[in-house]
Image 1 (cartoon, rainbow over the protein chains, first blue to last red):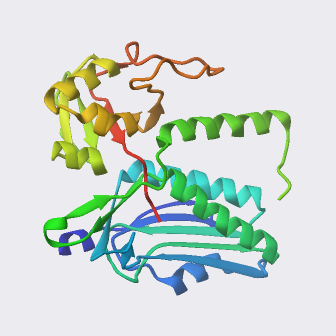
Image 2: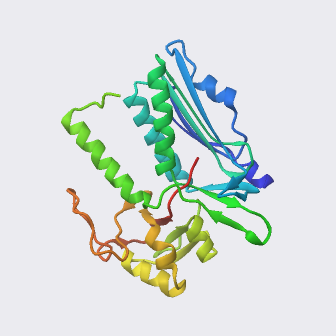
Image 3: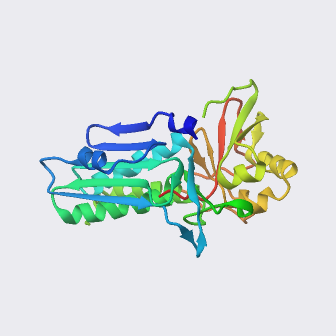
Length: 182
Length: 105
């Protein structure tokens, strides 16, 4: 466990306003908010995903997260860039924690900033749903003792198929010159 | 994920349920090998893996998703072409990964 905590965070950025990260460290809310803060933005929305102490009324000891790091980072960046563009954001930051996450602590932080609040609310929700659907990270719930643990799935559809469909749709939008009006 | 590359071999990475089923994080296989051939080898080595794990996995080769249709009648018609898994050949030095249904957040 201490060996895990010593692993450096892995960060991908696109300019100053798009930041995605995988880390074994605690996620820090103030740092994340400050990262997207800007004189151009009138609104900041933050989502913090925290670990619950039960699933299906079974008590959960803790969660552990593993990832295919190079792919997870690339997917996080793709999502961050797409959400940034679609909602004309000022900035976006997505951080996901790996390794053991104790109950009640944050496993994911998403912060978005925008000129106005409507875009910020929508972008924050969309970024989270996209992450849960596509990012190559897996959550294991540990029940403790003989019960062991279970790998969770956000959805049963293999992500590769969804990825492929999503990228074809995005290509079609670019060809038509359409911008979705959100 | 740094792995030592053995000439004429490729690396297969196991995640989540695939890792639990095989009790491994990764394994090397001899190249070249078709994707279908790989699935057959996996089923021989880890009986039941096809039904319990593979049918729910996506597959990447060198960080790019490839189309697979494990045990179904046929793939969707894609405008940019569809490579069936007996035609898709894994080469030496490739990094292949089994991607079970994800659960971030």
